[in-house]
Image (tube, rainbow, N blue to C red; front, side, top):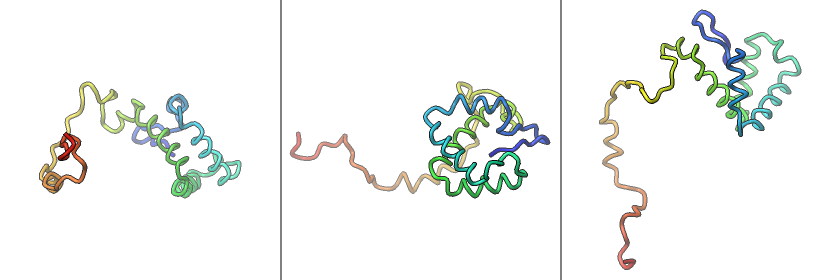
Length: 135
Protein backbone atom coordinates (compact mmCIF):
# COMPACT_ATOMS: atom_id res chain seq x y z
CA UNK A 1 0.00 0.00 0.00
CA UNK A 2 2.89 2.38 0.66
CA UNK A 3 5.86 2.07 -1.70
CA UNK A 4 9.39 3.14 -0.83
CA UNK A 5 10.38 6.69 -1.76
CA UNK A 6 14.18 6.56 -1.70
CA UNK A 7 14.60 10.17 -2.83
CA UNK A 8 12.83 11.35 0.33
CA UNK A 9 14.41 8.72 2.57
CA UNK A 10 11.08 7.06 3.26
CA UNK A 11 10.87 3.29 3.49
CA UNK A 12 7.97 1.35 2.05
CA UNK A 13 5.44 -0.40 4.23
CA UNK A 14 7.18 -3.62 3.15
CA UNK A 15 10.32 -2.65 5.10
CA UNK A 16 11.17 -5.46 7.58
CA UNK A 17 10.98 -3.17 10.63
CA UNK A 18 7.59 -1.80 9.59
CA UNK A 19 6.32 -5.28 8.69
CA UNK A 20 7.28 -6.50 12.17
CA UNK A 21 5.32 -3.61 13.68
CA UNK A 22 2.32 -4.42 11.46
CA UNK A 23 2.34 -8.03 12.61
CA UNK A 24 2.69 -7.05 16.29
CA UNK A 25 -0.12 -4.50 16.15
CA UNK A 26 -2.75 -6.49 14.26
CA UNK A 27 -4.63 -7.65 17.35
CA UNK A 28 -8.40 -7.84 16.86
CA UNK A 29 -8.05 -6.91 13.18
CA UNK A 30 -6.31 -10.18 12.28
CA UNK A 31 -9.42 -11.92 10.83
CA UNK A 32 -10.26 -8.88 8.69
CA UNK A 33 -6.65 -8.49 7.53
CA UNK A 34 -6.57 -12.15 6.51
CA UNK A 35 -9.84 -11.62 4.61
CA UNK A 36 -8.35 -8.56 2.88
CA UNK A 37 -5.17 -10.36 1.87
CA UNK A 38 -7.17 -13.32 0.57
CA UNK A 39 -9.36 -10.99 -1.51
CA UNK A 40 -6.33 -9.22 -3.00
CA UNK A 41 -4.72 -12.57 -3.78
CA UNK A 42 -7.87 -13.78 -5.54
CA UNK A 43 -8.11 -10.54 -7.52
CA UNK A 44 -4.42 -10.68 -8.54
CA UNK A 45 -4.12 -14.39 -9.00
CA UNK A 46 -1.18 -15.98 -7.23
CA UNK A 47 1.39 -13.47 -8.53
CA UNK A 48 0.62 -10.17 -6.77
CA UNK A 49 4.26 -9.66 -5.72
CA UNK A 50 5.40 -10.30 -9.28
CA UNK A 51 3.22 -7.58 -10.80
CA UNK A 52 4.72 -4.27 -11.86
CA UNK A 53 4.36 -1.50 -9.27
CA UNK A 54 1.73 0.38 -11.30
CA UNK A 55 -0.33 -2.81 -11.73
CA UNK A 56 -0.12 -3.55 -7.97
CA UNK A 57 -1.19 0.01 -7.16
CA UNK A 58 -4.10 -0.08 -9.60
CA UNK A 59 -5.28 -3.44 -8.31
CA UNK A 60 -5.01 -2.34 -4.68
CA UNK A 61 -6.77 0.99 -5.30
CA UNK A 62 -9.61 -0.70 -7.20
CA UNK A 63 -10.06 -3.31 -4.48
CA UNK A 64 -9.72 -0.81 -1.62
CA UNK A 65 -12.66 1.22 -2.93
CA UNK A 66 -15.00 -1.76 -2.56
CA UNK A 67 -13.21 -3.82 0.11
CA UNK A 68 -15.39 -2.67 3.00
CA UNK A 69 -14.41 -3.49 6.57
CA UNK A 70 -11.50 -5.72 5.59
CA UNK A 71 -9.99 -2.94 3.45
CA UNK A 72 -10.40 -0.45 6.29
CA UNK A 73 -8.76 -2.84 8.76
CA UNK A 74 -5.82 -3.52 6.46
CA UNK A 75 -5.33 0.19 5.82
CA UNK A 76 -5.59 1.04 9.52
CA UNK A 77 -2.97 -1.54 10.52
CA UNK A 78 -0.54 -0.58 7.75
CA UNK A 79 -0.88 3.18 8.20
CA UNK A 80 -0.62 2.97 11.98
CA UNK A 81 2.65 1.04 11.83
CA UNK A 82 4.03 3.12 8.96
CA UNK A 83 3.57 6.49 10.62
CA UNK A 84 5.04 5.20 13.91
CA UNK A 85 8.36 4.52 12.19
CA UNK A 86 11.07 7.01 13.16
CA UNK A 87 12.47 7.18 9.61
CA UNK A 88 9.07 8.20 8.25
CA UNK A 89 8.59 10.86 10.93
CA UNK A 90 12.03 12.34 10.24
CA UNK A 91 11.44 12.31 6.47
CA UNK A 92 8.19 14.21 7.06
CA UNK A 93 10.04 16.84 9.11
CA UNK A 94 8.90 15.70 12.57
CA UNK A 95 10.94 14.70 15.55
CA UNK A 96 11.11 10.94 16.01
CA UNK A 97 9.17 10.93 19.27
CA UNK A 98 5.70 10.46 20.61
CA UNK A 99 3.48 13.56 20.49
CA UNK A 100 3.09 13.57 24.27
CA UNK A 101 4.10 14.67 26.86
CA UNK A 102 5.92 17.47 24.99
CA UNK A 103 3.15 18.00 22.47
CA UNK A 104 3.36 20.02 19.28
CA UNK A 105 2.59 23.69 18.71
CA UNK A 106 -0.45 24.13 16.47
CA UNK A 107 -1.07 27.19 14.38
CA UNK A 108 -4.11 29.07 15.67
CA UNK A 109 -7.08 29.04 13.35
CA UNK A 110 -10.15 31.23 12.99
CA UNK A 111 -12.20 30.47 16.11
CA UNK A 112 -15.13 32.52 14.77
CA UNK A 113 -15.90 29.57 12.50
CA UNK A 114 -17.39 27.89 15.59
CA UNK A 115 -19.84 30.75 16.28
CA UNK A 116 -22.65 29.02 14.36
CA UNK A 117 -22.26 25.96 16.60
CA UNK A 118 -21.95 28.00 19.81
CA UNK A 119 -25.07 30.02 18.98
CA UNK A 120 -27.19 27.03 17.98
CA UNK A 121 -29.83 26.00 20.53
CA UNK A 122 -29.15 22.67 22.23
CA UNK A 123 -30.56 19.66 20.42
CA UNK A 124 -29.94 17.12 23.15
CA UNK A 125 -31.62 16.33 26.44
CA UNK A 126 -29.88 18.07 29.33
CA UNK A 127 -29.80 15.53 32.19
CA UNK A 128 -28.98 18.30 34.67
CA UNK A 129 -32.49 19.73 34.32
CA UNK A 130 -35.20 17.91 36.33
CA UNK A 131 -38.60 18.08 34.58
CA UNK A 132 -41.51 19.52 36.58
CA UNK A 133 -43.33 16.91 38.65
CA UNK A 134 -40.31 14.61 39.04
CA UNK A 135 -38.81 16.17 42.15
